[in-house]
Image (tube, rainbow, N blue to C red; front, side, top):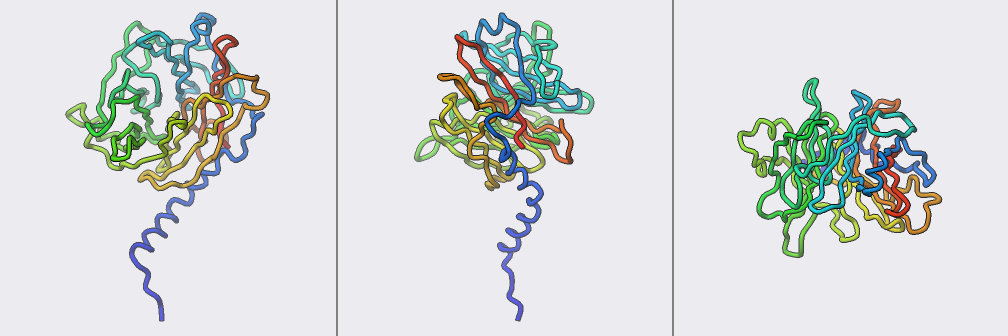
Length: 314
């Protein structure tokens, strides 16, 4: 006699089958080693090196073979600088142009949205808030931003991390939500089109999924990226000896796998140098059918200078 299969078991099996092609993404990074060569190294003009501006995130425009770096000044209130580079595989370069320092853009979560032939950028709103900003890269003296609220009253005003999925379907953001046992890092997933077409800039009730992620003092969120229905999140501080994991989730929050500790470029790191992940981005730069996940890493010290490098997690 055939045994009946419960709907729950069937749905679980179906989800596993549908996600199987994407679970392979969770193996990215297994081949990376400490001596890995960076895919691209961002250099800055000497005056910015002298200011010791902090590398915070990056985004890749593989349609135009360019990469943008997000940097923050160390004055208060801080200002954000965005630099545009020609992407030279396994090379390095100075910026082709720079968007002047501004206080209207926050310090993390740089990401790219393609809308027809146009490219828009998103980032955290300045300071501690529940908002993100959308704008176009500009080398003029002013930047026109539109601000969107993605989190409501239960959330602590915080530096939001944001990404647009590689296919421009999802807008995903991370903030901190109050709970009975303390605050929790919480992910919200929005339909990008619904946000852009909403009559109000308060979109905090439009989210389609919400779920909590790893929340530890020594593991702040440093990067967020999405390809199809896989969300990648990186964590870590600047302490070279501390772990820096990347964890993969389905769009509705099911954990798919992880890279326990990224380490490309870590071999022969000088003593007392920092090693910090900054930003994540899916991009189709190299051969193969699927985009790869790229991670930013900054190392160094103020007295000795900084490196700002992008690695492919293979």
